Image 1 (cartoon, rainbow, N blue to C red):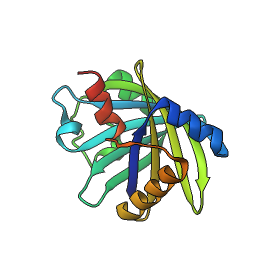
Image 2 (image 1 turned 45 degrees about the vertical axis):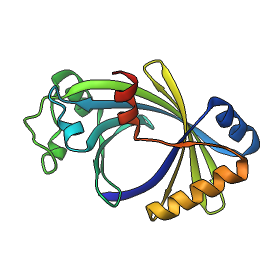
Image 3 (image 1 turned 135 degrees about the horizontal axis):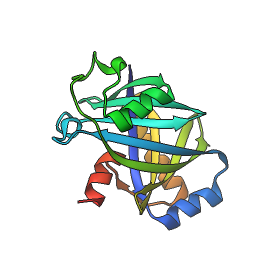
Length: 181
């Protein structure tokens, strides 16, 4: 379990391209994220999200739970069999039984694909995302830090240094729901 303090902002495609042009991108990561829900909206109703991210020939299962101070993340490495059981058998993996009801029937909500550009900014890492929500693309800056206030401060400094305007953004799964109403 880890606390995640992040500040995010949506930007235009033009601002995204401007940042790519002006900054040294250390690496680009292609993230394939499968989000799960139940027919009765269990995760949304409980201010949480369940996702599997394919990475490095493996899979990372993440349960995010929104708390007052920030998000709590429970991360687990899983194998292909566990992932396929979630997708095809709609089963909650055993490793989540301490955190959620094991009788839930999972539905594959969406595949959200993100091209993440990692940029060093002082002592911080800036993640610049181009995300495809089943055909709808948006652009986002994300900064994580040891507190939400510090993340926001670094974010604003980065945006000001590059002359980029933004609007505060919601988590990706919330944006998915808004885009596909």
